[in-house]
Amino acid sequence: MKTRIISSLILFPITVLAIFLGDIWLWMFMFVVSIIGMSEFYKVFKSEHRALLAISAIALICYYMLIEFIPHDGFFVMLFGMYIVLNLIIFTLQHKKISPQNVMVNIFGFFYIGVLLANVYLVRSLEYGVFFVWFIFISAWACDTCAYFSGMLFGKRKLAPTLSPKKTIEGAIGGTIGAGVISGAFGHIISAHVISDVNLAVVGVIIGLVGAIFAQFGDLSASAIKRHLDIKDYGNLIPGHGGILDRFDSVIFTAPLVYFVVQVLL
Image (cartoon, rainbow, N blue to C red):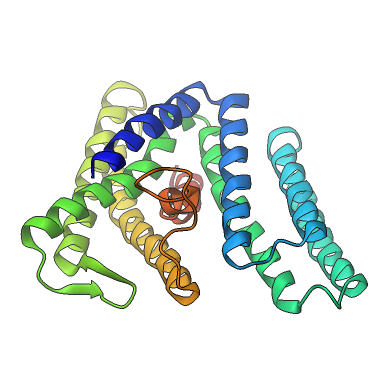
């Protein structure tokens, strides 16, 4: 626990600073997080073929360049289509060294980590995004914290014993309610001082509750992958937490949710 707290005290301020500064600083931060997360994912699946890794890295660079400089859906479709085609061309040329499973892991890792995590930057780039982006982390990390203490105090029934033996139903409920309350309070503060024409308290509660559910599924889905691969963590970059994916697995799910809600409701 001491190691986890120390690591959090280092990681949290860096994340907060990147989000606060926004622009190129958050762009670079999320790119680094994404590329490290993808490398961790490919490594645990033992899918580290240089040609596939190179094409994924290039595709991620292109994707981040597009969302920053050429925000047009048509370009995204072309990029994703070419990325898949190039993966299959590389597989065809090196089919004796690369399996179809390697190609599938490569493509899935790019979308699962690279594309979904980029939603953090997309939310921050919206009008009032400097405020909305915090809903992503409140939904994910506040839920995690509230679930931990709720489970410790009231936990009796296992939530998913085969995936995460320490998680309880009571903890999951406490995490969801806690995230909803904190997110709603944050939304109320924004409405009171910044965006008075929208009741962000209600929106915040909705995002917090739904986001907490998404966050827990993000965590459990990452755990399911680890259980199938018989590993404890995706890496050891962050002492006490594991790898980047072990810390951002829930954010991967909450980021696109918040981007969708903000775009549709606001």
